[in-house]
Image (cartoon, rainbow, N blue to C red; front, side, top):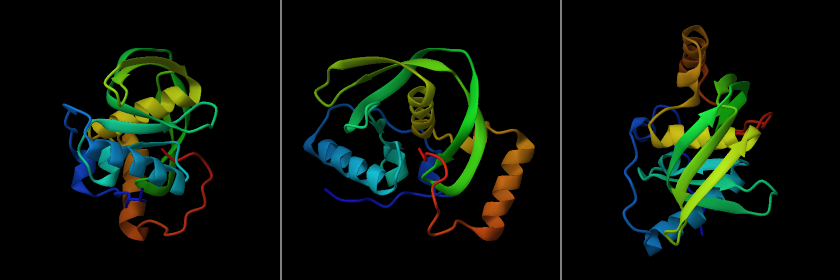
Length: 174
């Protein structure tokens, strides 16, 4: 297992819609292990394959009890409801945090690494993580969900200052 390089804002792979996974191969399983290592090394609670340079519809998320991580293949949100605004960060935009409005609850459907269907209804932080990571699979970053003034201010700041190399985590980064 290895810690992979997390792609940062500006990398074109972060703006592409990821491809569906046709079959879980030994390479996909190895990628999952590496993504889990990377997520924990970066102090994240979710990570999508495009964030480590692989344009596949695959994400890993920390479980609700903190016992480990779960891999989700070809995830999609089938239902959602309510709205809630909370601060988000992103491993691909280190040191950048902003309030994002998302669905309060979601029903996610995916497959596990054995090809079995998985259906999860999530609320709160877990629902936010699912939405954030699926956005990555669609080439969307959390700053795209901000109002134009806030988004432009953040983009100007990134262009002027770049990213801090050793950012203290003041919120969960996804």
